[in-house]
Length: 194
Image 1 (tube, helix red, strand yellow):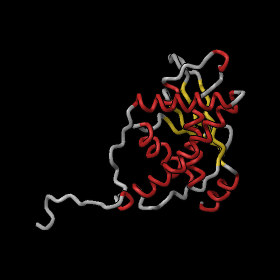
Image 2 (tube, one colour):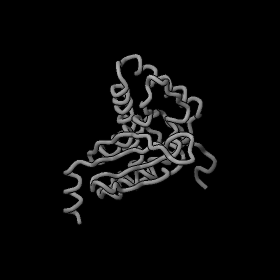
Image 3 (cartoon, one colour):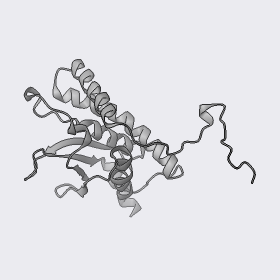
Image 4 (cartoon, one colour):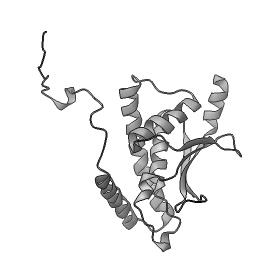
């Protein structure tokens, strides 16, 4: 057996392969860093809409990088070309990598053809956040909406992605719904592909 028991040494970190590695981050470390991100951006803005926009922009950068990593690692540099394929990829693969589980539901909007919703009963970014009364409509899910928008834009599916609270009977906290409204060009391309 040639090379049995030897560990390959890399002279440069760039030569190391992109293995799956350890995929978990300490929940307390994430909560602390995310809290700092929210507090930093809160000090920079005057209203809730601007704060949510800044969180969405931060999430967009994360989403673009997550797409590149997952396409390289899991799909052999191939990307989804169909609408339902990319939605399934976000709902299952991306969600599992980011939050450790598949999203609770993926639904098509009933009122508009171009709308889809990803719902989560207890979204991680809203789990440890207590919103002051003066910021009543603030939703940290804007960060996750930015991640989803970054993944979709990077894959060639431009969309407007927003986060909303939806009250649920029997639940103390409302569930978070990520609303995805695709651009007209995406629907036209999907119709051409059949």
